Length: 294
Image (tube, rainbow, N blue to C red):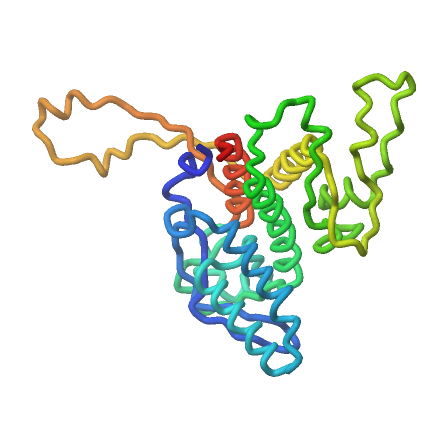
């Protein structure tokens, strides 16, 4: 399992203080470290729910002050619990100011407590929307007991599923593959010889941006899921090796210690929290094979 191979020492930053500014957006300070793999095992679904609550519930509130209050509560909860999706970018001015206390490109924990980090709320909402779409598709597959082991290859093209139109969360310049496939790509041309391998009648593309549903065949939907997750993880993970930590070896007799051998395990280090979330999406995609028809 991918999640079990995540480096147990991998940490991410969250913030104890979140200030909401009308002009500059949220400003974060008083950073602390935590281990997402042990504290947030289903974070992709938490992000999808957070997006749904913000996009489809908060926006329905007419009272501006109440809507702003709900947005503030949401951002404070997410950023204090989990942190930003991508790494902090610290300006050269800040680096110069705290230069003696920086370690390489990153400041010490004491300095991080003093620096106010800005937060790109627009980027957060975009990425959250992409994860939301993936999770909605997972739920459609699960609710229909559509594990790959239950669908024969020939039937996969004729099995049509209704999923949210990717245009609900993406636009032309976002590079979100489901949007590209559903909205921008032209329909495939029918096979000239009219053979049984002609599946063009089961493929819907170039759909309207305004319709809520994309009716897509099962085979293409699996391809879209796999390609999207692969693209999102490209450059987002690093494979390293975890060696035996001799400092953590138990206190034992010398003759017992002589029996210890070296241990090497391959582990995955996510580039950032967003990469970790897409690892969780990849994990759930592979788990779909375990769906059993009731």
